[in-house]
Length: 197
Image 1 (cartoon, rainbow, N blue to C red):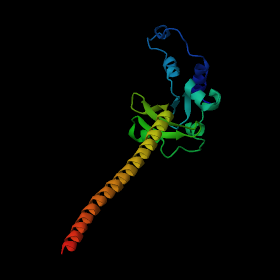
Image 2 (cartoon, helix red, strand yellow):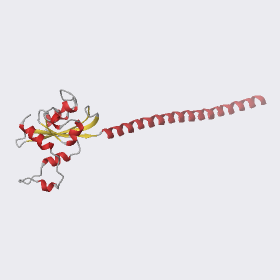
Image 3 (cartoon, rainbow, N blue to C red):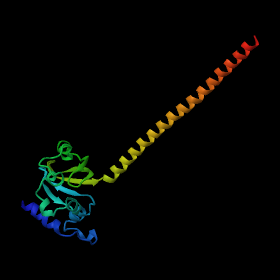
Image 4 (cartoon, helix red, strand yellow):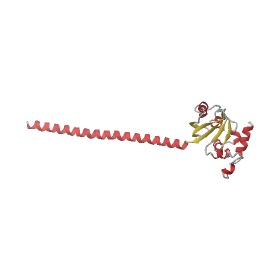
């Protein structure tokens, strides 16, 4: 592990401070990024351009179910996709080309849930890629609800079709009965006319 990763590891192992963030400013007046990083309620990683995990917030640590020491220095796809290579719809692939945030909906195998995963580039002053902020937002419940709505919609469409078919059959039967009554009346008149002659 490089010295930078060890430094981040030591800093991130400390529990987040709970006092007022205005008291957490550094001599330069900047707020400590770690407070904000740890406060993000979604699994969030900081990656280097080679997909190596440099930092993980507590949500990511909890989601991975591994201690921070087993996450840092590993590739994100190794931890969250149980794979030696990035998934085919990896948002980082697109982001590397576009240099813009690239969200992708994906199932994260290690977590057994569906996420919108976003990779946002962090560029240095010369515009070179320095690191990537990787945030995963769990949308499993929303996807399940969407699926339930689609299934219910499909059921309702099937019932409407059945009702339409029944209506067509009932109306068709009624129309046929009206037609038969007319034909019957016509035959009755012909029989009466024939009897009179």
